[in-house]
Length: 331
Ligand code: BTN
Image (cartoon, rainbow, N blue to C red; front, side, top):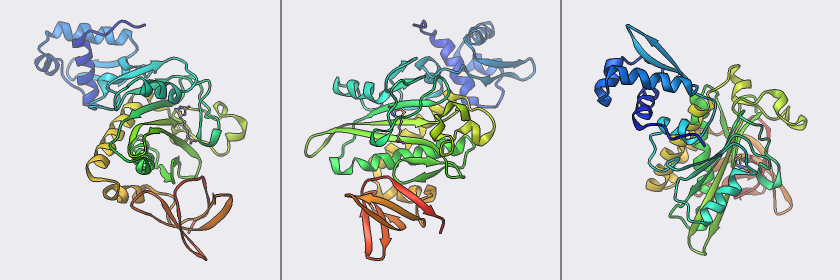
């Protein structure tokens, strides 16, 4: 296990991360953190040996130009300003499924916001028993334990909340993603970038925990996907033509997730429904979905205040609460 990083080194890193693409002077860092200029330099050197790329120019100062391609607590903590999501990070080089581990931790009392992250999954799961391709160090695989004050019937709202957050993080990373109800993030061409798997334990009147498992194809190349997914899956790399730093992307996801979860907890789903609508690539489309063994098809008209999809069919409006929809054609 890597030794803990000294606190002042972590503060220097956090300071540089906060400045983003901007240079910060050695003087500003030493004033702010109460360190000598020599100590700042020593920490910069130590960070470089851990894989951080830090530009240094005498007249301009320091700039964080690259972070190590690892998404452990040591890399993520300085990039995070969250109070719950990712405050505790359980990192694995390899694991069966981060969601299986998160569920175990939830049963053992893990707190709201604890996250399990892995560089690789050997048994990554998608919805409906499908596998989730999880090659090593290419993508982002994490599961977060949530303990919302919600009755079980309202649990599906959290998948929608998470999809807004992921959409925001993907757009920030330069991909104009859209949400396919209920849990998919699609690239502009319609290929899948990310998915969310939601699992819960509940008593009759209250949720005990929810584990949201999130898989985002960040730097997967075409050949990293199983052959049968190559036409329907894509990644940030394939969409932008350049890789994304996974640690920065993970931190953006955790931050957006916390912001939207907080908004949801304070104001309810009705208040953030517009944010979902704006990012949706489902509304206005002809869709088909299997409900209790029968096929429903029609126009996806809206989302109701509980997060159910309202589909207009010749027989009237159907309220769809779960299922895999197929997008048939544009309006
Ligand atoms: C889907 O679109 O079907 C949901 C995919 C969810 C995949 C993620 S990867 C991290 C977490 N661990 C898993 O085994 N699954 C989820």
